[in-house]
Image 1 (cartoon, rainbow, N blue to C red):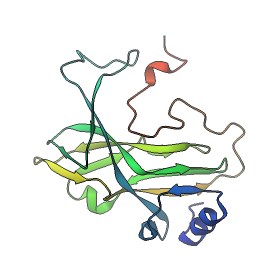
Image 2: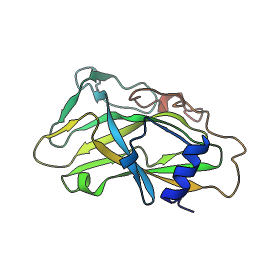
Image 3: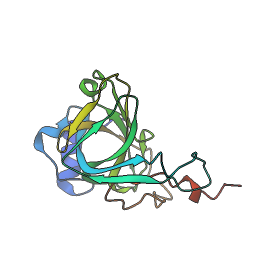
Length: 178
């Protein structure tokens, strides 16, 4: 079940769900808008011969009040907001329609597990033929919250728990790697 604005406000007021700092205009009828933070990672083409699933990717790190995404380029960013989900709520990360209409695709693999705490790393791709400039603090994505049928037996404690800036892929830490 997708949660309404009224339910989201109640959960935030009770402290069960935390989204901070929260702009009162960010609560939408069935979601909460998140704003762009000031930390960015760009895959460093000069330090990576290729990208594999077994080794860390090397990134160029930038902290700035704005960022320009060149055409057909990918970068990681972070939300301004830190969230904390209880063990019975999950969230979808969705791009805002107005952002998608300028050719900027946003996601974070689309899912935030119950029990996650931290800032959300966003995967941004400029599908346009022109550069796109983004300023910190602009509403960039939205979180759609879902109540699970029961509390998770094992809430999220994974390799991205507690992140407070954009975090590159840690797939090389997965236990199923050969």
